[in-house]
Amino acid sequence: MNIVLLGAPGAGKGTQAQRLVEEFGYAHISTGDLLRAAVAAQTPLGVEAKGYMDKGALVPDELVIGLVKERLAEPDAKEGFILDGFPRNLDQARALDAALPELGVKIDAALLVEVAPDVIVERLSSRRVCRTCGYTGTAADAVCPKDGGEMYQRDDDRPETIKNRLDVYRAETEPLLGYYADEDLLVTVDGDRPVDEVYAEVKERLGL
Ligand code: AMP
Image 1 (cartoon, protein in one colour):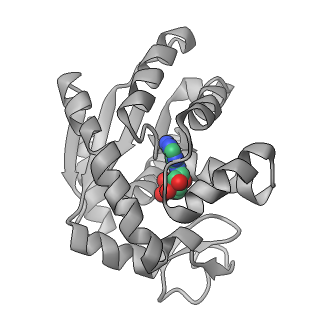
Image 2 (cartoon, rainbow, N blue to C red):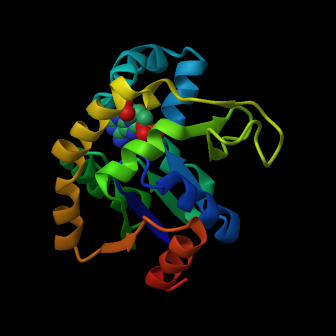
């Protein structure tokens, strides 16, 4: 199954994606993770992307679309994938639709994890991520509960950047809900509940 995950930053997309990957073995294609890896490795793309990411702005479409096309062409993506954080605007969604036939795949569902804005701000402020395995936890996790790794706060999860990211989401990404509804692919779950409950509904709604 090929899934596009939609939802505001901090809605729990990454957490739901991790669960689906663990249970079903889908390829997890997170453009945020790919970009952060490029920044850490100081590749030319990473160096260019960093300035946009630090401000909470979107990285230019041509960079991100190229990254996703390359990743979708890798063999594991043929067995099913979850796109997390991509597309982020209508041009990216159209570019994805244009690229899919060449790759011989189609999107089966666009899954929206819906959470109220005040909950989002609280979640993003307390989010901490494991430096070694990428596990997402909270400020209450002194170390990673999975592998004991160091938990750190993403630079763009600081209060001054959160507002910008939410504004970008509203202006650029929310129009995708109509786009995927028109394609009859939109499936919405209430993300403002414990992770296990959200995941149970995700599976039910996707027929998994
Ligand atoms: P995320 O981890 O999905 O919250 O993404 C972190 C940051 O990476 C975003 O605030 C953007 O600066 C950048 N980014 C991630 N995905 C995309 C995308 N599809 N298009 C443009 N920028 C992106």
